[in-house]
Image (tube, protein in one colour):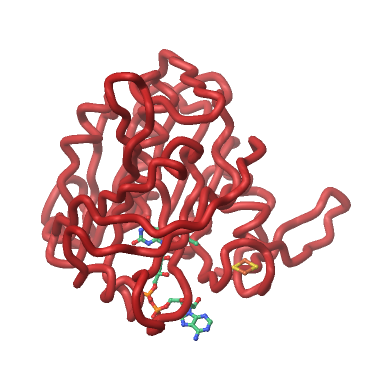
Length: 288
Ligand SMILES: Cc1cc2nc3c(=O)[nH]c(=O)nc-3n(C[C@H](O)[C@H](O)[C@H](O)COP(=O)(O)OP(=O)(O)OC[C@H]3O[C@@H](n4cnc5c(N)ncnc54)[C@H](O)[C@@H]3O)c2cc1C
Ligand code: FES
C-alpha cells in the first residue's frame, strides 16, 4: 500500500454537524492541515477537545475533503454512526465546538487499482470510505500530497447491504460521484432481499454483467469474512478495510491486532492501525 504522511494532532472547529439518519451523523471539520494530507482509506482519531470522558479518540475514516478555488484543502468530513460513549458525545456537539483530531493514520488505498471494473461492497456504516475513494479513482476529487488524481475510466458498482431501508443514509453524493448503486436489505424493504453476498452471486451469474477486476469491501467482520470467502471462491481479487477497535491509533497499544497470514503461511497478529486498515482479503485469517 502507499506510504502515508506523518500524522499531526490539532484542535479543529466544527463547521457543520448534520444528522443523516437518526443514528448517522456527518461532521465537517476545519482541519486543513490534515485535509491537505489525507488520502482515501486513511482515518483520523477524534474526541471532544474538552473534558476527559472519553479520554481516547475514536477512529473514523475520511469521508471527503473540501478544497477552495485555488485547490487548497480547507476542511475534512467524517460520517459516523452512534455506537457507544465516544460517538454519542460527538453527536451531541454543536457548530463552533472544537474536537481534538489526529491523523492522517493508517495506509491509504493504492493510487491506481488493478485493471477491470470495480465493485465496492459495503455493509451498514462501512459505506463511509467509498465516496472519497470513488472520487479519487475517477478523477473527481484530489487527495495528496502529492496531489494524485489517477482518472481511471472504469465502471464502479456500489453494492450496499443494510438490515432495513430506514437505516440507509442519503446516497446522492455517491450517485454524483459516478457509482452505480445497488441496494439490498435483509428484510426486503428496499432493493434486493437478502445479504450482499446474495446480490454478488446474482450479478456474477448474470452473463450481461462483466466480472470485476477488483472488489473492495468494508463493514462488519462477519460480512467481510463472507465477502472474502466469496471472492476467493470466484477467483476475484478482494481488498478489505478492517474496522477493529482501537485505543491509540498509532501502533503503541496493540489493541487493534488482526490475525494476518505471512508469506511463509504462518499467522501473526498485526496492528491494523499501523499496517492497515486495508489488507488483501486472502491474507486475513478470519475468525468467523
Ligand atoms: C480504521 C477505522 C475506520 C472507521 N471508520 C468509521 C467511520 O467512518 N464511521 C463510523 O461510524 N465508524 C467507523 N469506525 C468504527 C468506530 O471507530 C467505532 O464505531 C467507534 O470507535 C465506537 O466508539 P464509541 O465510543 O461510540 O463506542 P465504545 O464501545 O464506547 O468504544 C469503542 C472502543 O473504543 C475503545 N475504548 C473505549 N474505552 C476504552 C478504554 N477505557 N480503554 C481502551 N479502549 C477503550 C475501545 O476500543 C472500545 O471498544 C472505524 C473504525 C476503524 C478502525
Ligand atoms: S490502536 Fe494502538 S496499536 Fe493499533
